Length: 116
Length: 115
Image (cartoon, rainbow over all chains, first blue to last red; front, top):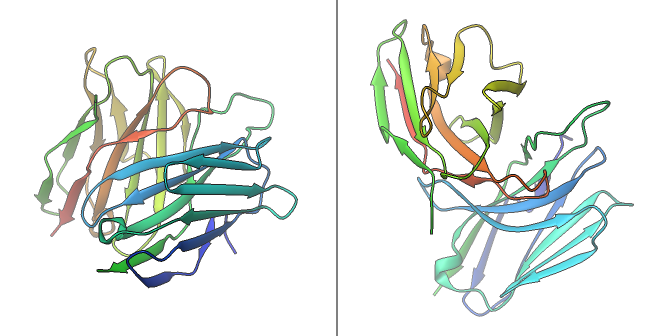
């Protein structure tokens, strides 16, 4: 598999339920970021977790990072119809012998549909 | 809140023509990026730009592509001779100066359609 693989590819839930999306990656990282993309729009940054962090919260979002398993999860609690979007994880990897300029490597994304 | 703006939102061009995609990054940001997303595929990195030069580029970013920051505000991506496979959404992003542990801010993209 490639760097930044999310699963599931699609997730359909009812409003009020929690949504969990997972991401796996292959190489060492500086950080892992989650982005949301509404249909036809740009990417909106949700949360960044550094390689030395294990968990981070932002509002209804909770992100975990397990560097030993090279995996991360994004939990959206009490989902709303407005959370319907594609969610992508993206990694920044250290550059051997040089400066990382922050290039993001994206996964395929999870399409989340929240039904009212 | 400051945002990254991209123009045009949709560009239709004949194969073989040159196209310039424009971006205005967030004003105090110093790192700039172009990404593309072919329909139904993942977002792919094209190029990063810092201190008035390319800092990193992908295999996609061949001699047909170039970037420029012609003034203090604009950041452009030029494709010299477009191919059908260049059809995609092109996203510009910028980042602040506090190291790579800072998020990138994306524009809404330009949809490029090559006929």
